[in-house]
Image (cartoon, rainbow, N blue to C red; front, side, top):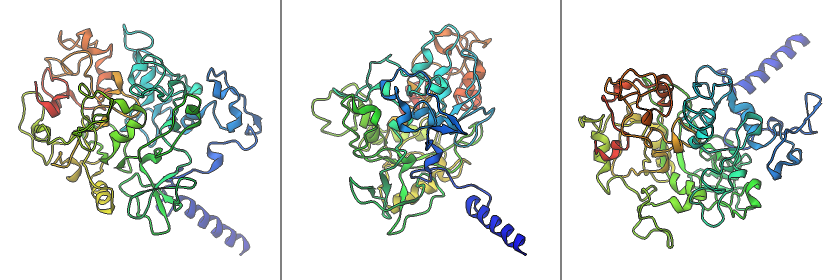
Length: 461
């Protein structure tokens, strides 16, 4: 009988940990994770002393002061978020297999992209070409290093930009989140900034629950909020974030090939304003009175005030299918290669709209195009982590006019079509690499000699 009781206790404990459906609770749950997941309490792992790798970043000369399970912050994150997958899987944001630097194909297909693209250099390109394709986070354990291709600070960062040598996963994501949603979805903060109820679950997903009056949910991807200042940026003079995290919701499953079903992250408001925490001089919100002292004349509008209705881009977006085809409908026009912000209010009703829109299975709501409230944002063109294209763009817009050849196949070095094999537009990629950079889509969904996808909003092709 005693053995039976113990057995039942173990079963009950397992159910509490795994949940009755067999799905384990998320590690972060929108808030701070359990300490030993990232830190080693006594500078050892499995009874062995942690030996730091050679690291040129001065702030990690004695990294063990942080008691991390990696040589630096990003390496600690990638201990879990990098994996030797052969297909997209879960929360992984970097392909962990050893990839050939020319023919390698990063496999993760998250909305933010795969950091392994930073290690891929096309045939004929320089050895640093990969570094142009994403945020160059420092993760010494996994061969990711900073880049000064565009200076020593974040582009558009002003007089005291975020230092590129201190760019880590926690430069954007707050591992001990201060920001959180109150029950009405206003952003509150943990002391010492403001009072904030404890985070009870993630607020990032379309299956997230609502907070009660004494609880809070996590903000989108536990991104840093007002006052956030990572230690790796302190010495540079960077003074911290000035904007709340963006209002957005992702489907609970989001890492997949999009050949038949797209992933729709429902972006609601504030994404560009949040990106401006580090890239403030690149923000042109479309306001009548832009930020004083900043010339936004030649900066593409992006932000809560950059409504797609201002130039009729919402109508073009809904009509545009591909080059030469303007027969689209607003009911099915959404394209995850060119997402937009819905412009909803930060309240319970707005959050419910986002939850009902986010999907990975082509739900009716997820395919709807922009209405009068929608606006362009930074992530309309860029991925947050890395992509297969320069400047971490969602599609190639830097080296030529076409993304497909006259044969209606992806451009690539192995194309038999003279147009499709043009070195100016292939980036040194094979057609297989190019297809994966477009998240597995068949080139046939576009036109022969399809023009760049800037035309989804502008239709100049």
